[in-house]
Figure 1 (cartoon, rainbow, N blue to C red):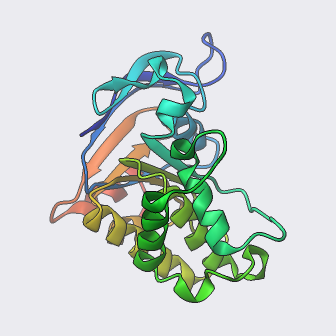
Figure 2: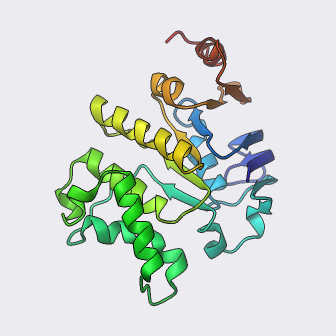
Length: 240
């Protein structure tokens, strides 16, 4: 299984793409940090990879399937997405919110069968959310909420998990916990995790690849090696 992008242009207008000539490849177990300055197009790229936004040119494939040719329901079985927007939902428990991740498989009635319950229980256990399962979502801290939203995405059982700034509103302790959790998920569940971040140190610590959208409008991939940090610094033209 691979996530592959070939000569992609992204944006809203064909005549004026936000970013051009993006090519990449990721495999199960890869945790990839998408880096770049504000406004460079990171969120646009994530939304395009997730199939929420039309591609201008090029193609994106997951498991050899062209995303542009798939229905919304088919995309929901290949890619799960956690956006940066804060979510405030009253009167829903953590377990019930996590269970919404099963919606691509439950049909229009949304009835959970034994297999669905098994998946939900496994994800709750994996992320150590048992003590929170019966609490209301809005009673949680920001760090706890983020873990619950990741759990909901994991319940979709997609090969690719995409997160837009997953640690944006968190303190240092919670940032570290979320990144460790994502690294564990990518390794144990053999998922491709793609996340945007401004936390370069965290990217270098937990991610085995960096995809960098430079201000010169080039797209650069840096893979973890002995001089990983030096290579990323060189592309970003900054010292960490």
